[in-house]
Amino acid sequence: MEAQLKRGSLEVCVLASLLKEDSYGYKIIQSLQNVVEISESTLYPILRRLEAGDCLKSYSVEHNGRLRKFYSITEKGKDRIKEYLQDFQELMNIFNYIAKEVKDD
Amino acid sequence: MEAQLKRGSLEVCVLASLLKEDSYGYKIIQSLQNVVEISESTLYPILRRLEAGDCLKSYSVEHNGRLRKFYSITEKGKDRIKEYLQDFQELMNIFNYIAKEVKDD
DNA sequence: GTATAATACTATACAACACATAGTATAAAA
DNA sequence: TTTTATACTATGTGTTGTATAGTATTATAC
Figure 1 (cartoon, each protein chain N blue to C red):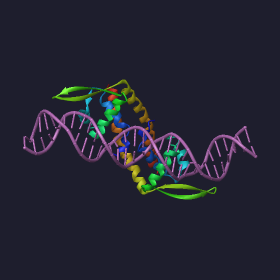
Figure 2: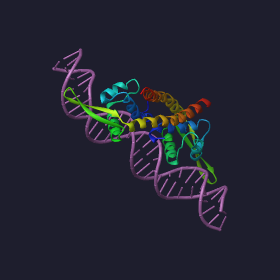
Figure 3: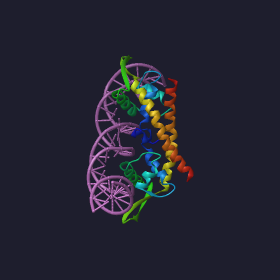
């Protein structure tokens, strides 16, 4: 899958993965494996950006002597998901147009 | 609509608009108005990129003393559209996952 | 008992692309 | 005669997915 097409969706995908329960970097990657392949170099910057934008809050929990950083979604994060779902309808318009032109050709 | 979400789709949208007949910048913007709002500053770079990538060919036609640049889609351009339609299925997976998580929450 | 894999991050840098802004220039319409 | 429509080019910016590299611990396999 072309990288450009994922733009805007990956962040929201990460947000959505935190709706049911808080999680941390490594586990998020695992839990999304069936949905989309997301590497560490993609995920961690996303987590930091989302936290900087108040869509996520984080707290650290000690685990085997090391700190594990957990993230939880905020109300703003939930709003962000809703906006995405609406925006995607517009993207579907574009997709439908392209599919139609191909079919008619 | 958030700009990032359009990434990768606009180019293909322009390609698809040229399937039925050749066209030129200004007219492409008009013909896509019902599908997606695309400005000059977005379209013209796209046309140049697509031509540089051999997805489009161009030729100039004199019109009212000025040259009007027409674009026609190439086989490579058509292949590009097909790839997009496939990639979009993967994007739908992401969307469906997000919608599901929201619903279950 | 040592090498490998899994866990769990941070930091730096790059490339693609949507879009803003500005500039150029002609023709038609008000 | 001023505005609107037509029809482009050029330059620069911000976002974001991803590559690469580095750090450090624990568990598993040979």
